[in-house]
Structure formats: structure tokens, C-alpha cells
Length: 350
Image 1 (cartoon, helix red, strand yellow):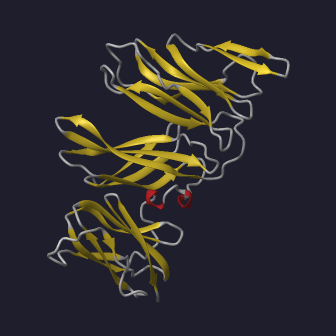
Image 2 (cartoon, one colour):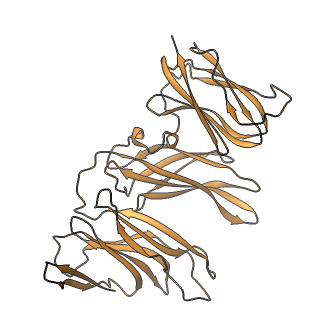
Image 3 (cartoon, rainbow, N blue to C red):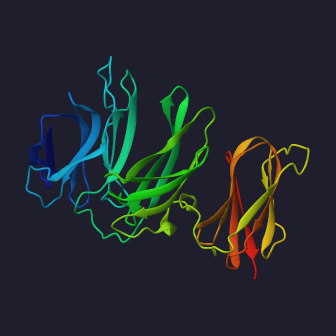
């Protein structure tokens, strides 16, 4: 693969450096290249051979490296697991760009194949920095969680969670060990390690058929820097914090069928009594069946407890929340049901 850097010092464009990147006999093509404000260069591309399914990789160099050389060891964004057949069209949207916020992070998108077939392509987007990207990070956090299912044949599905870990400067963190818990249809804990793009894909060991719901939260992240759940892009990304006395944990009791009438709209009521000590009631209405999550948060946005996390039929519900073991203060409770979301404040006194 040939690459070139052109510069214009005011008297017209001229060739500053060039090079050939071919670290082995695999085929590399359909590249994207960009330079950030530090003068670092990133080069992303497709790679394939007789023994390598079409995959996505990148290399790069810093501004102080010898001219004409890509010095960053080749990194894999994702390995393909299938090949494309019956068509030679490839890489319509291959692109390397620089993040306009920090002018240091690179973003690359390219296609790959998961399952052999025609027009069976997938798209992957990754972000990363090369050495010289600037700054010294001090902690890591969960940047995103995307839940899905993975088909296993004969109608069987696994729960799937794609978790991305960033540092506090906005760079992806590789080698972070992520432990998290699936809920919904599946109830199990899984662990995995992030790749160079800061992403890890976790799958449930169990499978299910029919309608499947998948929720996921992170219990812990072990990396070279400390994990700070307060920096998570959403408070929902962290599993309930262990902030209560083990001898008196908060509890929840749910009552259904409060009325024979079906509500005509989604609604989250103000808890009563409020202020309360130690128990209060939270009521909500569902005009249609939905997967419901009702959770308690502290004022830092940390999830303290999940009261409801299940599929529910249309109707009116009441949850009795006993906050024994929690310190006094202001708390928030949030209802998510389908596309509906609502949040209200409550006060625990002692």
C-alpha cells in the first residue's frame, strides 16, 4: 500500500514524504488516511488473504518518526469471520477522520464480513490515538453500551452487549477487563477484554427463543487507570452501587391490578408519602405492554437500586420501596417503558 504526504509552504504543493506499507504477504487495500494537529498520521484499511477473512486494521506514525515509515505496529479493529461472494464491490464508505473536538483522536470506518455471502457486509466505526496524541489521562469510564442479540440458528438467540471504555481525555482504552451483568431474558455475569478501539463484545452463555429482551450494566472495569463510574456517559451504565448496609438492604414489593381499567397514557406518579422514612410508594401506568425499568438514583447520578426490570402487561402498578440502609437525602426515581421515560424526586429523612 502506497501513501504520500504533501505540504504547501506558501509557494505551492510539494511532496514531503512517501512510503510503502506491506508488513507481510496479506493484501491491504481501500485505505483511508488523515493527519491530526500534532502531525500524527493514521492509516486504516481492509486486509485479507487465503487464510484471513476481510478484516479492518490500522497503523500510523508520529510527527517525530523517521520519514517514510509507519512505525505504529499494525492494530486490529475487528477480525472478519466470513467472505463476500458474487460481487467485487467493496469499501464504499472507507474513511479516516480527525475528531474536531480535540484534533488528536482518529475515527475510522470500514466494512467487514461476519458471515460468508453476497451483500452480507457489516460496518465498523473505531476511534483511537497514536503516540503523541497529547495529554495524560487519569481515569477510565464506560462511554457506551449497545445491547442486541446474536442469532445461533434454529431460532436460538444469545444476549449481546457491546461495551466501549474511554479514558477521561476521550481516548479508547485497550486491555481493560470489563465485568458486567445481563438482565431481562438473560440473567448472568460475563467478563471480557477491550481491543484497541476500547470495545469489547460480551455474549450470554445461555440462549433463548421467541421474543428476547436484553439489558446490561457494568459491575467493574480493571485497567491501568482507575475506573470512575461517575464519569460514565449515562448513570444507567453502572450496576447498582454497593452503598447499603448488608444487614438492612433496600427492598421493593410490587402490587398489580390496582384498577380494572386500562390507562390511556403512560404515567409516573409522585411517590407518597414524601418525604418518607423508611418506606414510600411509587405508582405508574402502562397503556400497553412494555419492558419496564424502574430504578433509584442518588444525586450523583449513580444507580442505587433497580426496583423493576421486566416485561409487564398494560395496567396500573404500585411498588413499595423500603430504603432501610440508605443514608438520608434526595434521591431520584426513573421509569423507562418502551419509548416513554419520566423522572421524579423524592426525599428520605431520618
